[in-house]
Image (cartoon, rainbow, N blue to C red; front, side):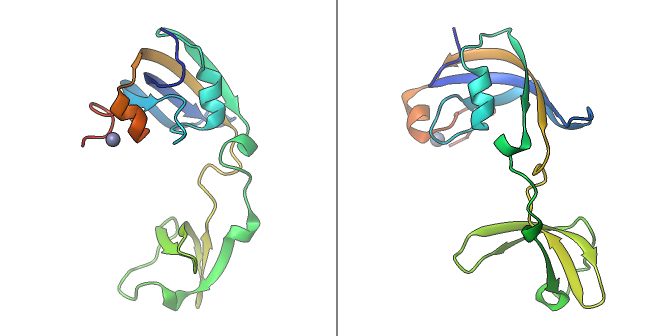
Length: 162
Ligand code: ZN
């Protein structure tokens, strides 16, 4: 069976940066996704590379930052007054915060510096500017159920439990 639209694939993967540092991995056969869904369960460039693979196949896929999480945007690094943070929270570099813009879009930022009156936050995705190197092994492929196709995600083990 080939991995095509509306198949569910169980894959093992290792994600490394260009220097070979492992940034993420799933080795236990627990990562499943619905291929070809409009919900785009994986990066489109990654699904494209896996299209037509069969169980037992492996793939090395390199996705440049521009086709993954984009380039780093210096405008997303901002200085904000310290007083907008919760008073009872001790701020630390590396701490993540969520906030919302005026139009309600969720923004996730990480504190990168703390000064006397101001805090520097970075709203770039942690993988922005990073070329992604995936080592992937296709473990299993099956047909998606009609319900899974309708919902745009996998149900059961490793998927949504509802
Ligand atoms: Zn569902």
